[in-house]
Image 1 (tube, rainbow, N blue to C red):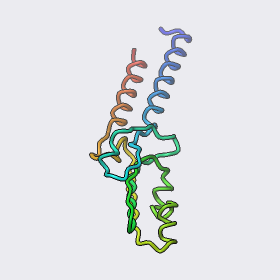
Image 2: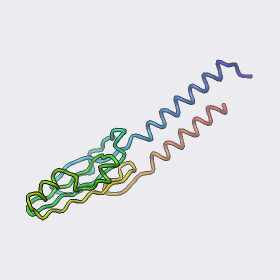
Image 3: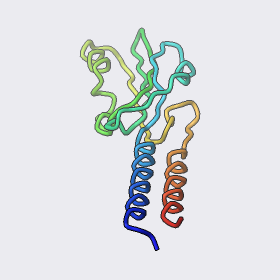
Image 4: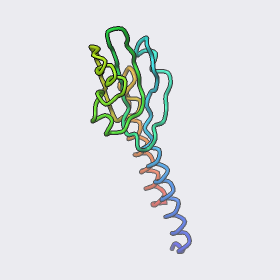
Length: 138
């Protein structure tokens, strides 16, 4: 038979394990950069997004004389609002320039890279859940 202290310690260790797993799963990782050359320049720097930023994004800007590529983290609302909300696009349109602004958003780790990759968070969560279950059974 287990003592009350043993059960409490077991429950506490399971809770801590699950909290660590959940925080690991929620921290979205995206590529971040600004380039005037190509998307290829943008697959080096990886960042961990803030908890309120739930989307990775690719942004392309082109006007009559300039173009640029950018990647980073955005909120769901920023993705829903689309590229016209970005200051650079608005200002170019206000000046009467013919402008192209494209925004692509996704919600998996590193999904804004050259190759859309990632189910790693789901795998990490499953491993953590199994470890938590094993801790209960042992």
